[in-house]
Length: 210
Image 1 (cartoon, rainbow, N blue to C red):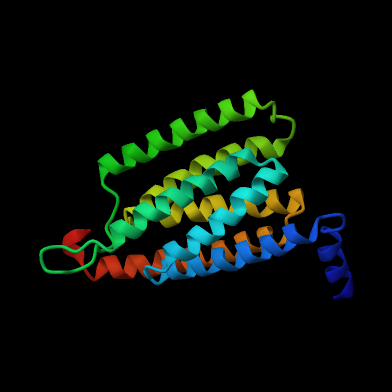
Image 2 (image 1 turned 90 degrees about the vertical axis):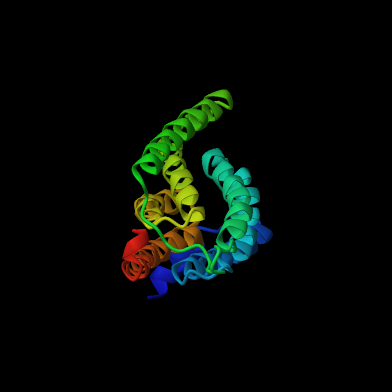
């Protein structure tokens, strides 16, 4: 067990203390945000705003431009999602979980392709395609862009994108030396699976809006 701890903390040798503390805080609030999302709790957004603001800075330092931009996007979409989730219908009911329509699936594909193209341009302009992590980061960024958009719209399928992106992110961040963040994405994967099940159950209770 001591060898595991030694290896774990050896990943942070030479890393400034303030970055380690910020990463732990970002992971903590990120965990709260995903958990609140699973529970359909509006606190998903304020906690998410704190986490994404922290990671914008950290990812800039580590040169993961794709994920830095996606966290900036999360920040913006969290504000929109906060507004959207608190909307009321004529019966004063909050926005329910719904299934993604064919039109929204097409929008999802478009968002994925546009994001992929944009991040490729960003990496090319800054000459950052110097490691396999850059290509993986480009892919996960596009996946997460779609996931965040669907989550803000309270669509069940958002969890599918989170699950795929989270699984890919675990080895990516481990390789980059962000051990706490890698562990966070592993936990995110588990929560996302349960989140899908919880939202599916909520949707099944309202078949008329499926």
